[in-house]
Image (cartoon, rainbow, N blue to C red; front, side, top):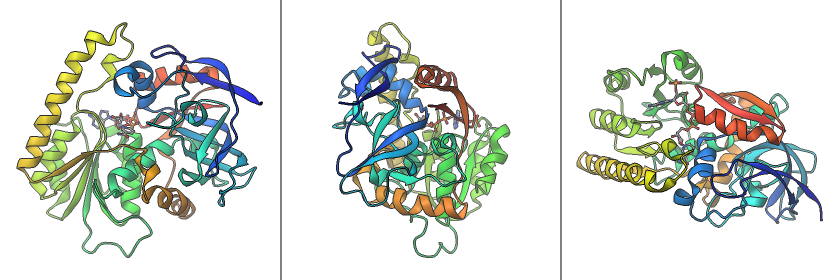
Length: 372
Ligand SMILES: NC(=O)c1ccc[n+]([C@@H]2O[C@H](COP(=O)([O-])OP(=O)(O)OC[C@H]3O[C@@H](n4cnc5c(N)ncnc54)[C@H](OP(=O)(O)O)[C@@H]3O)[C@@H](O)[C@H]2O)c1
């Protein structure tokens, strides 16, 4: 039996520790990857700190992490798109319900990835750059393209919409937002978005036609002005306060679809507490009330809302199309760039806990990455 080292969550709310785990053989539809870089997402420290209440299915010990870049060391018998030695990046879905968090977590030397959620890393991208994509890109794609959310046409489909429809991305400087801007633009939509003044130019450079400051009191009015009477295909809400702001924009522009990726109240306050109970009670009460309020507001205005789950593309037709066709094509033609830029905070699995802490402390248009 071969083994390798993993940064493991031994028990809920414990700091990650280095342990030895069994190196799996890939299943028929998987590749086994020697991980060279991982990126950190808010969900990683949220699961670490609050999995007992929000990821109740997750058993420990578990290996967390969604974003993997590295090289293929073994392929399953049904794999056709990859060969041993090839550089790849992909979405690890081990913390999802009914998945295996030991085999499929990112934060370890060897991880298994589903072929359908993996893409070849182009020669001109480093592993650190490739690692910024998986969860941000997948979540953005779910919000934009899944029929239960905005249901937009994917890049590479039939010719672009005439006249162009507008997509609103609130939170364009987040990791999900920067991918959403690029995907929507590549699909032929006009994008209007938000970011702080410091990041507005970066979001424009990714393809947004207009970028307004999400901290400004006039942000909603500024977005409505930027839409300028054109038809709105829908909005993607990212960040605190984004749902209500997007509902306001949609109701003033005639848009009828909203994809929400952020909880209405941040779970951050629960993480790091000594006792989850009773601290969770006011947080979940506020989440429940905010959700009911937004749902009622949306209904009154004829707006369809839904909460996005970024790894749900594992089980639909969009996932393989995104990872197998759209992503390779967009990387080749330059319409998809790694954004936010990687912020490499350390090297080796021992640096992953520091990476989680760094992400939790807050980033601005940066993706926290650890090199292995
Ligand atoms: N549902 C899912 O499956 C899923 C998956 C991934 C992420 N998410 C959620 O999606 C959100 C974004 O995640 P991420 O990893 O992309 O975040 P991130 O990169 O860590 O977000 C950092 C950015 O958030 C921006 N920001 C801060 N407050 C904001 C606000 N009120 N409105 C809009 N933007 C704001 C900041 O922009 P400036 O510095 O320019 O101010 C900063 O650049 C989080 O709530 C995360 O939990 C959900």
